[in-house]
Amino acid sequence: MDYRSLTFLEESFRWFGPADPVPLSYIRQTGATGVFSALHEIPYGEAWPIDDIRDRRATIEAAGLRWTVVESVPVHEDIKTGAGDLSRLFDNYARTLRNLAAEGITTVIYNFMPVLDWVRTDMRHVLPDGSECLLFDPVQLAAFDIHALCRPGAEEDHAPERIAAAAEWWQSLDDAARGEFVGNVIDVFPGCKLGLTLDDIRAMLDRYSGIGRPELTANLSRFLDAVLPVAESVGIRLAIHPDDPPFSVLGLPRIVGTAADLDAILSLSDSVSHGVCFCSGSFGARPDNDLTAMVRQFAPRIHAVHLRSTHHEPSGTFYEADHLAGNADMPAILGILLDEQDRRQAAGRADWRLPLRPDHGHTMMDDLGRYTPLTPGYSAIGRMRGLAELRGVMHGLRGAQFRAALA
Image 1 (cartoon, rainbow, N blue to C red):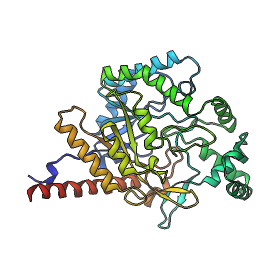
Image 2 (spheres, rainbow, N blue to C red):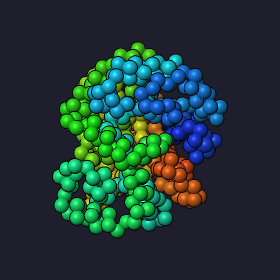
Image 3 (tube, one colour):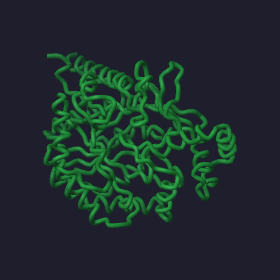
Protein backbone atom coordinates (compact mmCIF):
# COMPACT_ATOMS: atom_id res chain seq x y z
CA MET A 1 0.00 0.00 0.00
CA ASP A 2 1.23 3.53 -0.75
CA TYR A 3 -0.12 7.07 -0.62
CA ARG A 4 -1.74 6.69 -4.05
CA SER A 5 -4.34 4.47 -2.44
CA LEU A 6 -5.70 7.62 -0.78
CA THR A 7 -8.40 9.56 -2.63
CA PHE A 8 -7.79 12.76 -4.57
CA LEU A 9 -10.19 15.42 -5.75
CA GLU A 10 -11.69 14.40 -9.07
CA GLU A 11 -9.73 16.06 -11.88
CA SER A 12 -11.90 17.63 -14.55
CA PHE A 13 -11.67 20.07 -17.45
CA ARG A 14 -14.24 22.50 -18.77
CA TRP A 15 -15.61 21.58 -22.20
CA PHE A 16 -17.94 23.83 -24.19
CA GLY A 17 -19.42 21.13 -26.38
CA PRO A 18 -18.84 20.19 -30.02
CA ALA A 19 -17.83 23.75 -30.96
CA ASP A 20 -15.02 23.79 -28.38
CA PRO A 21 -11.64 24.03 -30.13
CA VAL A 22 -10.25 21.70 -27.44
CA PRO A 23 -11.65 18.24 -28.25
CA LEU A 24 -12.53 15.62 -25.66
CA SER A 25 -9.64 13.46 -26.86
CA TYR A 26 -7.21 16.20 -25.78
CA ILE A 27 -8.94 16.54 -22.42
CA ARG A 28 -8.51 12.84 -21.76
CA GLN A 29 -4.80 13.16 -22.53
CA THR A 30 -4.41 15.72 -19.72
CA GLY A 31 -5.19 12.99 -17.18
CA ALA A 32 -8.60 14.45 -16.34
CA THR A 33 -11.39 11.94 -15.85
CA GLY A 34 -14.35 14.31 -16.10
CA VAL A 35 -15.65 17.47 -17.68
CA PHE A 36 -17.66 20.46 -16.57
CA SER A 37 -20.01 21.12 -19.49
CA ALA A 38 -23.38 22.56 -20.48
CA LEU A 39 -25.83 22.82 -23.36
CA HIS A 40 -24.78 26.32 -24.40
CA GLU A 41 -26.93 26.21 -27.51
CA ILE A 42 -30.19 26.26 -25.55
CA PRO A 43 -31.56 29.80 -24.97
CA TYR A 44 -31.54 31.10 -21.43
CA GLY A 45 -34.76 30.32 -19.63
CA GLU A 46 -35.71 27.31 -21.76
CA ALA A 47 -35.85 23.79 -20.36
CA TRP A 48 -33.12 21.38 -21.40
CA PRO A 49 -34.67 18.40 -23.24
CA ILE A 50 -33.71 15.06 -21.75
CA ASP A 51 -32.75 13.71 -25.18
CA ASP A 52 -30.23 16.52 -25.64
CA ILE A 53 -28.80 15.85 -22.19
CA ARG A 54 -28.56 12.15 -22.94
CA ASP A 55 -26.80 12.79 -26.25
CA ARG A 56 -24.26 15.09 -24.65
CA ARG A 57 -23.58 12.63 -21.86
CA ALA A 58 -23.14 9.82 -24.39
CA THR A 59 -20.65 11.91 -26.38
CA ILE A 60 -18.60 12.59 -23.27
CA GLU A 61 -18.66 8.99 -22.12
CA ALA A 62 -17.73 7.71 -25.58
CA ALA A 63 -14.49 9.71 -25.17
CA GLY A 64 -13.72 7.84 -21.94
CA LEU A 65 -14.73 10.72 -19.66
CA ARG A 66 -17.53 11.51 -17.23
CA TRP A 67 -19.88 14.51 -17.21
CA THR A 68 -18.81 15.54 -13.73
CA VAL A 69 -20.60 18.87 -13.33
CA VAL A 70 -23.06 20.98 -15.30
CA GLU A 71 -21.55 24.41 -15.79
CA SER A 72 -23.86 26.12 -16.01
CA VAL A 73 -27.63 26.14 -16.13
CA PRO A 74 -28.01 29.91 -16.68
CA VAL A 75 -30.43 31.96 -14.62
CA HIS A 76 -32.59 34.15 -16.85
CA GLU A 77 -32.34 37.92 -16.38
CA ASP A 78 -36.08 38.08 -15.54
CA ILE A 79 -35.39 35.97 -12.46
CA LYS A 80 -32.60 38.32 -11.40
CA THR A 81 -34.73 41.42 -11.90
CA GLY A 82 -37.87 39.81 -10.48
CA ALA A 83 -39.95 40.71 -13.54
CA GLY A 84 -41.68 38.76 -16.31
CA ASP A 85 -43.22 35.29 -16.29
CA LEU A 86 -41.31 33.90 -13.33
CA SER A 87 -43.57 30.88 -12.93
CA ARG A 88 -42.66 29.62 -16.40
CA LEU A 89 -38.97 30.26 -15.86
CA PHE A 90 -38.97 28.48 -12.51
CA ASP A 91 -40.84 25.53 -14.04
CA ASN A 92 -38.33 25.31 -16.88
CA TYR A 93 -35.40 25.42 -14.49
CA ALA A 94 -36.97 22.71 -12.34
CA ARG A 95 -37.64 20.55 -15.41
CA THR A 96 -34.00 20.91 -16.43
CA LEU A 97 -32.88 19.76 -12.98
CA ARG A 98 -35.17 16.73 -13.14
CA ASN A 99 -33.89 15.83 -16.59
CA LEU A 100 -30.26 16.16 -15.53
CA ALA A 101 -30.86 14.00 -12.47
CA ALA A 102 -32.56 11.37 -14.64
CA GLU A 103 -29.29 11.14 -16.59
CA GLY A 104 -27.21 10.75 -13.44
CA ILE A 105 -25.80 14.28 -13.23
CA THR A 106 -25.97 15.60 -9.69
CA THR A 107 -23.94 18.84 -9.50
CA VAL A 108 -25.12 22.05 -11.18
CA ILE A 109 -23.31 25.40 -11.09
CA TYR A 110 -25.16 28.68 -11.62
CA ASN A 111 -24.45 32.36 -11.02
CA PHE A 112 -26.49 35.43 -10.13
CA MET A 113 -24.37 38.09 -11.82
CA PRO A 114 -26.54 40.83 -13.38
CA VAL A 115 -26.24 41.51 -17.14
CA LEU A 116 -22.66 40.28 -17.65
CA ASP A 117 -20.87 37.19 -16.44
CA TRP A 118 -17.17 37.62 -15.79
CA VAL A 119 -15.63 40.90 -16.94
CA ARG A 120 -12.10 41.47 -18.28
CA THR A 121 -10.68 44.34 -20.30
CA ASP A 122 -7.81 42.51 -22.04
CA MET A 123 -8.16 38.95 -23.31
CA ARG A 124 -4.56 38.69 -24.53
CA HIS A 125 -2.33 40.37 -21.98
CA VAL A 126 1.26 39.34 -22.74
CA LEU A 127 3.32 38.16 -19.78
CA PRO A 128 7.13 38.43 -19.58
CA ASP A 129 7.53 34.80 -20.70
CA GLY A 130 5.48 35.45 -23.85
CA SER A 131 2.36 33.59 -22.74
CA GLU A 132 -0.99 35.40 -22.65
CA CYS A 133 -3.60 35.75 -19.93
CA LEU A 134 -6.82 37.56 -19.05
CA LEU A 135 -6.51 40.96 -17.36
CA PHE A 136 -8.80 43.47 -15.67
CA ASP A 137 -7.76 47.13 -15.72
CA PRO A 138 -10.05 49.52 -13.79
CA VAL A 139 -8.91 52.44 -15.96
CA GLN A 140 -9.97 50.61 -19.11
CA LEU A 141 -13.28 49.63 -17.51
CA ALA A 142 -13.85 53.29 -16.66
CA ALA A 143 -13.16 54.15 -20.31
CA PHE A 144 -15.75 51.61 -21.40
CA ASP A 145 -18.29 52.82 -18.85
CA ILE A 146 -17.88 56.56 -19.55
CA HIS A 147 -16.86 56.81 -23.20
CA ALA A 148 -18.29 53.70 -24.90
CA LEU A 149 -21.37 52.86 -22.86
CA CYS A 150 -21.96 56.51 -21.86
CA ARG A 151 -23.80 55.29 -18.76
CA PRO A 152 -25.58 58.13 -16.92
CA GLY A 153 -23.84 58.79 -13.63
CA ALA A 154 -20.83 56.63 -14.53
CA GLU A 155 -18.38 59.32 -13.41
CA GLU A 156 -19.69 58.97 -9.86
CA ASP A 157 -18.42 55.38 -9.69
CA HIS A 158 -14.81 56.09 -10.66
CA ALA A 159 -12.09 58.05 -8.89
CA PRO A 160 -11.06 61.36 -10.54
CA GLU A 161 -7.58 60.09 -11.38
CA ARG A 162 -9.07 57.05 -13.10
CA ILE A 163 -11.48 59.21 -15.06
CA ALA A 164 -8.58 61.31 -16.36
CA ALA A 165 -6.49 58.25 -17.19
CA ALA A 166 -9.50 56.60 -18.89
CA ALA A 167 -10.05 59.62 -21.13
CA GLU A 168 -6.39 59.64 -22.15
CA TRP A 169 -6.38 55.89 -22.87
CA TRP A 170 -9.64 56.05 -24.87
CA GLN A 171 -8.30 58.87 -27.02
CA SER A 172 -5.22 56.77 -27.81
CA LEU A 173 -7.36 54.11 -29.57
CA ASP A 174 -8.47 54.21 -33.18
CA ASP A 175 -11.97 53.12 -34.19
CA ALA A 176 -10.96 49.51 -34.88
CA ALA A 177 -9.24 49.15 -31.52
CA ARG A 178 -12.24 50.66 -29.76
CA GLY A 179 -14.57 48.22 -31.48
CA GLU A 180 -12.44 45.23 -30.52
CA PHE A 181 -12.16 46.44 -26.94
CA VAL A 182 -15.92 46.95 -26.58
CA GLY A 183 -16.57 43.48 -27.98
CA ASN A 184 -14.17 41.95 -25.48
CA VAL A 185 -16.01 43.52 -22.56
CA ILE A 186 -19.61 42.83 -23.52
CA ASP A 187 -19.54 39.48 -25.31
CA VAL A 188 -17.55 37.03 -23.20
CA PHE A 189 -20.37 34.73 -22.14
CA PRO A 190 -18.54 31.41 -21.81
CA GLY A 191 -18.96 29.07 -24.72
CA CYS A 192 -21.22 31.23 -26.83
CA LYS A 193 -21.37 34.56 -28.61
CA LEU A 194 -24.65 36.39 -28.06
CA GLY A 195 -23.81 39.20 -30.46
CA LEU A 196 -24.66 41.88 -27.92
CA THR A 197 -24.38 45.57 -28.78
CA LEU A 198 -23.91 48.60 -26.58
CA ASP A 199 -27.61 49.36 -26.98
CA ASP A 200 -28.39 45.84 -25.75
CA ILE A 201 -26.26 46.42 -22.66
CA ARG A 202 -27.91 49.81 -22.04
CA ALA A 203 -31.36 48.21 -22.22
CA MET A 204 -30.29 45.44 -19.85
CA LEU A 205 -28.85 47.95 -17.39
CA ASP A 206 -32.08 49.97 -17.48
CA ARG A 207 -33.93 46.95 -16.15
CA TYR A 208 -31.84 47.14 -12.98
CA SER A 209 -32.90 50.68 -12.17
CA GLY A 210 -33.92 50.65 -8.52
CA ILE A 211 -32.40 47.21 -7.89
CA GLY A 212 -29.64 47.20 -5.32
CA ARG A 213 -28.09 44.51 -3.15
CA PRO A 214 -31.22 43.95 -1.00
CA GLU A 215 -33.49 43.58 -4.01
CA LEU A 216 -31.09 41.29 -5.89
CA THR A 217 -30.66 39.15 -2.77
CA ALA A 218 -34.43 38.93 -2.40
CA ASN A 219 -34.74 37.80 -6.01
CA LEU A 220 -32.09 35.14 -5.41
CA SER A 221 -34.00 33.97 -2.35
CA ARG A 222 -37.21 33.68 -4.40
CA PHE A 223 -35.36 31.65 -7.04
CA LEU A 224 -33.96 29.31 -4.39
CA ASP A 225 -37.39 28.89 -2.78
CA ALA A 226 -38.69 27.76 -6.17
CA VAL A 227 -35.94 25.37 -7.26
CA LEU A 228 -34.25 24.02 -4.11
CA PRO A 229 -37.11 21.67 -3.17
CA VAL A 230 -36.93 20.15 -6.64
CA ALA A 231 -33.14 19.88 -6.52
CA GLU A 232 -33.26 18.21 -3.13
CA SER A 233 -35.97 15.77 -4.21
CA VAL A 234 -33.92 14.52 -7.18
CA GLY A 235 -30.49 14.64 -5.54
CA ILE A 236 -29.09 17.67 -7.36
CA ARG A 237 -26.53 19.87 -5.60
CA LEU A 238 -26.77 23.50 -6.70
CA ALA A 239 -23.53 25.48 -6.44
CA ILE A 240 -23.57 29.26 -6.76
CA HIS A 241 -20.50 30.72 -8.48
CA PRO A 242 -18.98 33.92 -7.06
CA ASP A 243 -19.15 37.20 -8.94
CA ASP A 244 -16.19 37.89 -11.20
CA PRO A 245 -14.87 40.38 -10.39
CA PRO A 246 -16.39 40.30 -6.89
CA PHE A 247 -17.31 43.98 -6.73
CA SER A 248 -19.73 46.33 -8.45
CA VAL A 249 -19.22 47.01 -12.14
CA LEU A 250 -21.22 49.39 -14.35
CA GLY A 251 -23.24 50.44 -11.33
CA LEU A 252 -24.68 46.93 -10.90
CA PRO A 253 -25.00 45.22 -7.54
CA ARG A 254 -22.83 42.18 -6.90
CA ILE A 255 -23.83 39.95 -4.00
CA VAL A 256 -21.41 36.96 -4.08
CA GLY A 257 -17.97 38.42 -3.48
CA THR A 258 -16.89 38.08 0.15
CA ALA A 259 -17.11 35.70 3.10
CA ALA A 260 -19.90 37.84 4.53
CA ASP A 261 -21.80 37.59 1.23
CA LEU A 262 -21.46 33.82 1.17
CA ASP A 263 -22.50 33.53 4.79
CA ALA A 264 -25.65 35.55 4.08
CA ILE A 265 -26.50 33.58 0.93
CA LEU A 266 -25.96 30.17 2.50
CA SER A 267 -28.11 31.22 5.45
CA LEU A 268 -31.05 31.60 3.05
CA SER A 269 -31.51 27.84 3.22
CA ASP A 270 -29.94 24.94 5.09
CA SER A 271 -30.90 22.53 2.30
CA VAL A 272 -28.18 20.01 1.46
CA SER A 273 -28.69 21.06 -2.16
CA HIS A 274 -27.74 24.69 -1.47
CA GLY A 275 -24.00 25.20 -1.75
CA VAL A 276 -21.17 27.01 -3.46
CA CYS A 277 -18.75 26.55 -6.31
CA PHE A 278 -15.54 27.74 -4.67
CA CYS A 279 -13.63 29.71 -7.29
CA SER A 280 -10.30 30.82 -5.86
CA GLY A 281 -9.73 33.10 -8.85
CA SER A 282 -13.00 34.99 -8.58
CA PHE A 283 -12.79 35.45 -4.82
CA GLY A 284 -9.08 36.16 -5.19
CA ALA A 285 -9.78 39.22 -7.35
CA ARG A 286 -10.41 41.04 -4.06
CA PRO A 287 -7.10 41.41 -2.18
CA ASP A 288 -9.02 41.64 1.11
CA ASN A 289 -10.45 38.13 0.72
CA ASP A 290 -8.57 35.54 2.78
CA LEU A 291 -8.95 32.55 0.47
CA THR A 292 -7.60 29.98 2.91
CA ALA A 293 -9.93 31.14 5.66
CA MET A 294 -12.87 31.18 3.26
CA VAL A 295 -12.35 27.66 1.99
CA ARG A 296 -11.99 26.45 5.58
CA GLN A 297 -15.16 28.26 6.69
CA PHE A 298 -17.35 27.07 3.83
CA ALA A 299 -15.83 23.65 3.13
CA PRO A 300 -18.96 21.72 4.20
CA ARG A 301 -21.04 23.65 1.66
CA ILE A 302 -18.65 23.39 -1.30
CA HIS A 303 -20.06 21.30 -4.16
CA ALA A 304 -17.56 22.10 -6.93
CA VAL A 305 -14.12 23.71 -7.15
CA HIS A 306 -12.44 26.10 -9.61
CA LEU A 307 -8.77 26.70 -8.88
CA ARG A 308 -6.63 29.53 -10.25
CA SER A 309 -4.64 32.38 -8.76
CA THR A 310 -4.66 36.14 -9.25
CA HIS A 311 -1.87 38.69 -9.31
CA HIS A 312 -2.73 42.22 -8.13
CA GLU A 313 -1.11 45.53 -8.99
CA PRO A 314 -1.33 48.57 -6.66
CA SER A 315 -3.34 50.35 -9.37
CA GLY A 316 -6.22 47.90 -8.95
CA THR A 317 -5.33 45.98 -12.09
CA PHE A 318 -5.28 42.20 -11.71
CA TYR A 319 -4.43 39.36 -14.03
CA GLU A 320 -4.50 35.59 -13.90
CA ALA A 321 -1.19 34.27 -12.66
CA ASP A 322 0.22 30.75 -12.84
CA HIS A 323 -1.86 28.33 -10.80
CA LEU A 324 0.81 28.08 -8.09
CA ALA A 325 1.68 31.79 -8.10
CA GLY A 326 -0.39 34.89 -7.37
CA ASN A 327 -2.29 35.43 -4.14
CA ALA A 328 -3.71 31.93 -3.58
CA ASP A 329 -1.97 29.59 -1.14
CA MET A 330 -2.83 26.59 -3.29
CA PRO A 331 -1.27 23.91 -1.04
CA ALA A 332 -3.27 25.20 1.92
CA ILE A 333 -6.49 25.38 -0.11
CA LEU A 334 -6.05 21.88 -1.52
CA GLY A 335 -5.16 20.51 1.90
CA ILE A 336 -8.43 21.79 3.36
CA LEU A 337 -10.41 20.40 0.43
CA LEU A 338 -8.76 16.99 0.75
CA ASP A 339 -9.56 16.96 4.47
CA GLU A 340 -13.18 17.85 3.71
CA GLN A 341 -13.39 15.06 1.16
CA ASP A 342 -11.98 12.61 3.71
CA ARG A 343 -14.58 13.78 6.24
CA ARG A 344 -17.41 13.19 3.79
CA GLN A 345 -16.11 9.78 2.81
CA ALA A 346 -15.77 8.73 6.44
CA ALA A 347 -19.35 9.84 7.04
CA GLY A 348 -20.50 7.49 4.29
CA ARG A 349 -21.84 10.22 2.02
CA ALA A 350 -22.60 9.14 -1.53
CA ASP A 351 -21.50 12.59 -2.75
CA TRP A 352 -18.16 12.60 -0.96
CA ARG A 353 -16.02 13.19 -4.06
CA LEU A 354 -15.21 16.86 -4.75
CA PRO A 355 -14.76 17.71 -8.45
CA LEU A 356 -12.17 20.33 -9.36
CA ARG A 357 -11.04 21.89 -12.56
CA PRO A 358 -8.14 24.21 -13.33
CA ASP A 359 -9.88 27.49 -14.01
CA HIS A 360 -8.72 29.36 -17.10
CA GLY A 361 -5.09 29.02 -18.10
CA HIS A 362 -2.46 30.93 -19.99
CA THR A 363 -2.38 30.76 -23.77
CA MET A 364 1.08 29.42 -24.45
CA MET A 365 3.31 27.45 -26.82
CA ASP A 366 1.45 26.12 -29.87
CA ASP A 367 -1.85 27.48 -28.56
CA LEU A 368 -0.62 31.04 -29.21
CA GLY A 369 -1.39 30.45 -32.87
CA ARG A 370 -4.79 28.92 -32.12
CA TYR A 371 -6.38 31.66 -30.02
CA THR A 372 -10.15 31.72 -30.33
CA PRO A 373 -12.48 34.47 -29.06
CA LEU A 374 -15.15 31.84 -28.37
CA THR A 375 -13.38 30.53 -25.28
CA PRO A 376 -10.83 33.07 -23.99
CA GLY A 377 -8.90 31.67 -21.05
CA TYR A 378 -9.65 28.08 -22.01
CA SER A 379 -6.70 27.04 -24.14
CA ALA A 380 -5.53 23.44 -23.84
CA ILE A 381 -1.87 23.65 -22.87
CA GLY A 382 -2.16 26.33 -20.18
CA ARG A 383 -4.94 24.45 -18.42
CA MET A 384 -3.05 21.16 -18.75
CA ARG A 385 -0.09 22.82 -17.05
CA GLY A 386 -2.40 24.09 -14.31
CA LEU A 387 -3.97 20.69 -13.79
CA ALA A 388 -0.55 19.02 -13.64
CA GLU A 389 0.60 21.52 -11.01
CA LEU A 390 -2.54 21.01 -8.92
CA ARG A 391 -2.16 17.24 -9.24
CA GLY A 392 1.43 17.52 -8.06
CA VAL A 393 0.37 19.49 -5.00
CA MET A 394 -2.25 16.87 -4.13
CA HIS A 395 0.29 14.06 -4.50
CA GLY A 396 2.73 15.95 -2.28
CA LEU A 397 0.08 16.50 0.38
CA ARG A 398 -1.10 12.90 0.30
CA GLY A 399 2.47 11.60 0.36
CA ALA A 400 3.28 13.69 3.43
CA GLN A 401 0.05 12.54 5.08
CA PHE A 402 0.85 8.91 4.36
CA ARG A 403 4.41 9.14 5.66
CA ALA A 404 3.19 10.87 8.83
CA ALA A 405 0.69 8.07 9.42
CA LEU A 406 3.49 5.50 9.17
CA ALA A 407 5.84 7.36 11.49
